[in-house]
Each structure stands twice: as structure tokens, then as C-alpha cells.
Length: 254
Image (tube, rainbow, N blue to C red):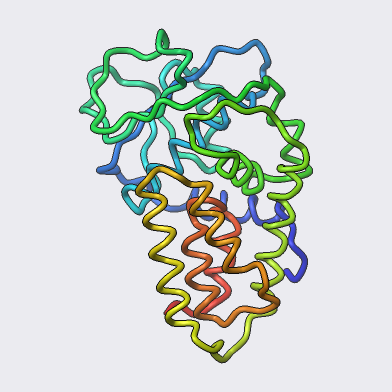
């Protein structure tokens, strides 16, 4: 597939991931479902799910097992269709490693124990996810949510920012298609510095500045070596899991 097509990528990797046996994860995370009337999932609830999945991946290195407090079976099935592992809330369960909770909906949070809790701000828009997926895809939506600022910030939908996230995904795809067989000058030191900066900023719970470091590294690039692409694809895995999985499948692991 030479042209970037998020429909194809999402369908392919959702099918692949569905075939992998779902093992019991040691890392447990939870978030809450904010009640809504729209039958299609709203952007604010999708943001909570994606933040929980993102920070769970960053903390553990694997897809976290997420309990979605207050969500019914239909919502759980919707989340699975987004590539996020979810299950109904079990109050008798063991303490959670991570909890992502909306700051203004503490009434929805039962008395549960989390090793780490992040109280995030609001996404002040109730628009349905279904209005954006056909044009932008899950990776672009996820990038958009994560690049707006720290998770504690309130913000609203910005078409300009969402379109920018989609263009960035396209650029990464094009770099992956134009990968080089050799090495670029000084790439080892530059890659080590990039990995250090991203890890440091993620430890500070700043996904937007970590992503900015990756964007800065790629800004003047019109091609990447296989080693560069491998590192960038791995760094982008929590941000754009479908694109990252496809790029990693195209290259020989280091």
C-alpha cells in the first residue's frame, strides 16, 4: 500500500489484534464513562479512553487492560472497535495501577484505589466520534487529543489542529515509504538524544512536548534510514498505534 489510507490500516490491525489471545494483563487501568444521550460515542469519552490507553502503554510498555466504569455493553463494544481493551467495572477487583478521571465528574468515580491517578480537564464538545472517523481516522484523533497540551487542560475542538494531526500522520507515512537502506550522518547520537527527550517528557506527563520533540526531529527530513524509522515508529506507538504497527511491519527489526 503506497498511499496512506487510514481505513485500510485500521481494519487490518484491528483484525490482527483480535486474533491475538487476550492474556490477563498485570497492568490494570480504569477510567469513567460520562453519561451522554447520543448513541454514538462522544469526543470527550473517546478522549478519556485514549488518554488511559496512552498513559498505560507509556507506563507498562503493553496495552493496558482498562475497566470502563459506568459503561454498558454497547459502549464496551465501541471501545473494542477502536483497538482499546476494555471490560466492565468490577468493584471487587484488585487495586489499579492507573486511573484517569475527569476533574469535573468526581461523582462518577467510586471509592477505588489507584497507585497513580490523573485528574484531567474537559473536552468541551459533545460531537459524535462518528462525524470525524471517516475523514481523519483513529490515529489522527488520538494525536490531536494528545498534542493540545497537558491532560489537565480544558479545550475544545479545533479543526485546524485536527487537520494538522492528519497531515503529520501522512508525512510519517511518506517517510516510511521513502526509507533509505543506508545510515544518515550522525544519526546514532541524534536518535539517542531524541529517545532521551521523549522519555523525560513522558515521565513529566507532558505528551504534547514529547510529541513536539519527535516533530522537531522530523521537521527537515525528506527521508529516513531504516534505523531512524524503527526508532520513530516505536516512539509513535502510544500516539498512533495503527500507523506505527504498519511501519514496523515494513522494516526489519533492529
